[in-house]
Amino acid sequence: MSPVTPQVPSAPSALRPQHPVSRGLQGLVDQFALSLRSGGSLDTVFVSGVSLSTGAVQPGDLYVGVPGRNSHGAAYAVKAREAGAVAILTDEAGALIAAGSGLPVLVTPDARAALGAVAAWIYGTADNPATLFAVTGTNGKTSVVYLLFAVLTQLGVTSGLTSTAERRIGDLAVTSSLTTPEASELHALLARMNEAKVTAVGIEVSAQALSRFRVDGLVFDIAGFTNLSHDHLDDYASLDEYFAAKLELFQPHRSRRGVVTVDSDWGRRIVLEAGIPLTTISNQPEIPADWHMNVVGASAVHTEFVLEGPGGARLQTRVPLLGWFMAANAALAIVMLVESGVALSEIDACLSRDGGIDAYIPGRAERISGDTGPLVIIDYGHSPDAFLNTLAALRPFTTGRLIMVFGADGDRDTTKRDDMGAIAARGADVVVITDFHPRFEDPAAIRATLLAAARAANPAGELHEVPNPRAAFRTALSLATEGDTILYAGPGHEEYHEVAGVKIPYSARDDSREALREAGWL
Image (cartoon, rainbow, N blue to C red; front, side, top):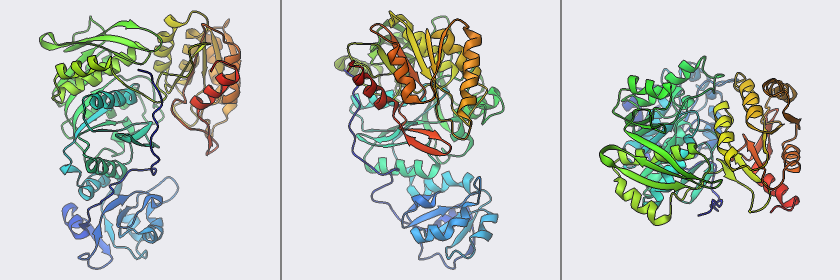
């Protein structure tokens, strides 16, 4: 099996049901005890969709106007009406703003908090028979969701997923804009999946999704936890607060059962504080757990592992990805499937038939290079822990020098930058620091922080500063030869480079391939 990028048909930016069912707006008012402030009788008004953005409104939609960073969404009620919205749901302040819009104005104390339940009612999500898998953690969420999708597909199950990289229904895929979509988009996606007879869905659930009501209106059948490490401290005041956001997924109003990796204190805390039945998994033999994963073989293109569980349960297989952490992600996905009712023997049979898990995960430990020249890996990881694990995984398969290219997010958690620079300098032989989504920050200042941390960690290390990402990769490639490895960390699957609010088209994967061809390596 080779990790070839799949060709998928083009699709709109969000997936909605193709045959939406209209429901009487008065029923929505009655169901949620909404207040009608203007618009007259609702007896002849029907709603078939819901949108949080006027740009996404389709005829028959309920437009939901919430306070924004610069203005209130209710200020765009007229634009929503012109796009086909049949009513607006908003708060008290929004009701005053939208009073003259010509739309029925429905009022609730917090429209964003109500969005999930309202979208579930409009799209009939509760009637969707699909098994819902949720995955949370700092690193590995996307990989676990794709590995769930891969194994389910190998089992012959019609599946879907929503992740940082894309939303997918079988072979149909669209690019994602958020790790977890807004509740309006998520429920529409599930309704579209229901039309396609999807019976299992993997959903990547970020801490922000839980804090900002994006998964409201859903109760997951199985929730999985990968790990928790330094990240998102721009959104959360401390790691404890970040953990508390994720812990909510393991409470009865969010999930029915959970599978938790207990290799860290954070995982063991979930076991103590969760309110649902849990199964535990560890990648370390000395840690007590229901299931254990052990790597038994590895190369630069695959990792083979054994998974052992209760009652002598055992499975040996491989994943076409580099690193023990990818085996850990695969093991978590398999145990989540077992907890959902799939027999381990059935999983074992299909994976044995296919020679392992047949997975493609865009931009996650993805090999770009060919059979000759340096090994080139593109990875989405942009946290200290991701750097540490990926560099350690690459070292055994690097006979020459390990070269790392990376930058740091602008307008995001600044507290992790020192650790990122230090880990890169200690783990790689050559470090090339470049720009990575500086957004509205001064990119030179971001690079200066990373450079200072790298120099402090390894004063004798070879260090290069190349602001332009294209030039940065080519600098790394010019320093490499057969036996060397280049890790380009950060951009992963993304197709843009964000500078001062402008998203400039840029694919690290495509650009790296082009550079390899220019150098005669592809």
